Image (tube, rainbow, N blue to C red; front, side, top):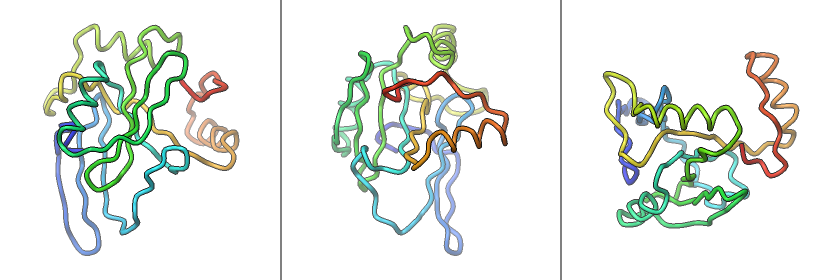
Length: 168
């Protein structure tokens, strides 16, 4: 994730665990741990993919490609572009153009926050200027409705309006 310029909050290497904690924007901390498993590089089958909300997709893609990332695939759904890349060790992540004209609450709040000048939390390093936050985590599961019900009931999370194509 160094290609994205995410600030490192801390690192550890003790016993059988090693990892880094990176600032993902807003109130999100992005944690990377050693697993010993080879990365899945196809976004259509990856179990979990983090997708960063960015303000200048083409510039961020060019930046990460210039420092060793490799492009996987691009998808465009409802005029919202997402580019999936592999980092220098092959792990998959996505960059999605900010979707300010979306009617969905999470995108409206992201736009409001960005337009108000919010660029992070006091006491934490700033993200690069074109990256707003870790905006999405895409999980691929056998039964999405059951998973959504679990989180809604157990954690009290709201289920957002469904989208036939998965873009929220």
